[in-house]
Length: 143
Image (cartoon, rainbow, N blue to C red; front, side, top):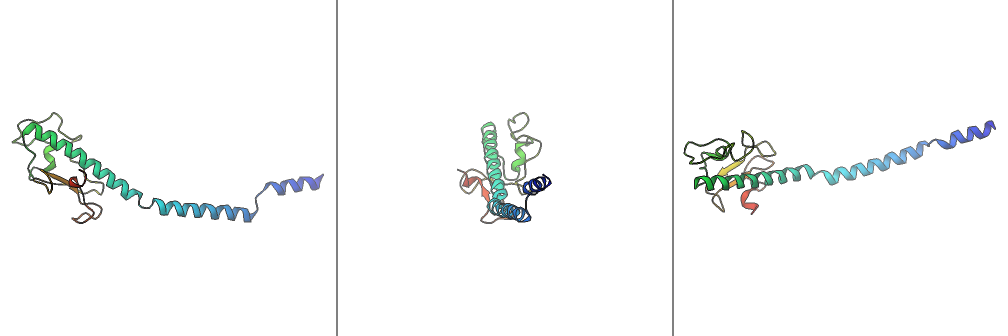
């Protein structure tokens, strides 16, 4: 009877080899996941910047409907949160939520120009590198 109890105890545990195999499989799966998800944060930032640019474009259109023109380049996007001195009409609370113009996902200010490259205005993010280059995300790309 003592022999049976010893056999049962031994049979219920895992061998070192089994544990090493499981750890190896988990390591391989984590490696695959890391490689596949590596670009995801940057893609999420690009999507967030695109959405904020669309939102600012809508706010600029509303400002234009109220004032018969877009804010000047000098007034910038700040005209959407603080009433410029020459604004005929200004929406209570501003055209964007908050008291400040949001920064892009890389913590850089959005660039605003009137007239734009392909329209009455342009709003764009300088992208991950923070300077004008091919990775910029602009309102002209979202149309």
